[in-house]
Image 1 (spheres, one colour):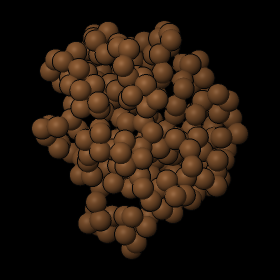
Image 2 (cartoon, helix red, strand yellow; image 1 turned 30 degrees about the vertical axis):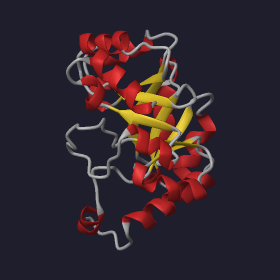
Image 3 (tube, rainbow, N blue to C red; image 1 turned 180 degrees about the vertical axis):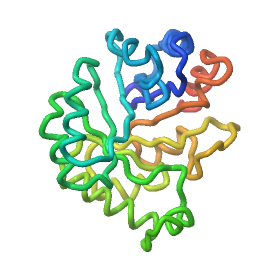
Length: 224
């Protein structure tokens, strides 16, 4: 289990809740990282809190999607946070992805494919003619061409993505056995996702809602 990473999604604006998550998820069985998104970074004390974290794997999930100069400038402005991973939308284009890679230093740039909240019908409604699977394949090729360090895709697309993108594959849309689906449509259990070929998982509500310590123990049992 130690060779695979679990990124815990700290989807909250509460410092005390994040402190609880970090404290109660420490264990010797699984390699843990912490993912902070727009909600926490835009909260009153969120950025300052992250800047003080030490000896933790920090995943900043901003999903940057802008012109090349804005994306590279944003990355430079985050360098005081000791970030390990930063997400960018692959749909921002090859030039923007290359610009970000040029200035990233030790930060691993993670390309986001198609959000797990979307399905084929959603993509049609915003003008895409290709199928979801074909779009993700094209995005994986672009990530590979831009030499990104990792890619985010649904666990359902991992097998196809692995044929194209040879580095770290991170999958959200993960639920422990018996948990509600929520707002993500393309989901799997942790064990299924790793068996499909994912190298790292992002798990949020399944671990952070209710008894965090018990949830971690449940995850460990499911991965055995």
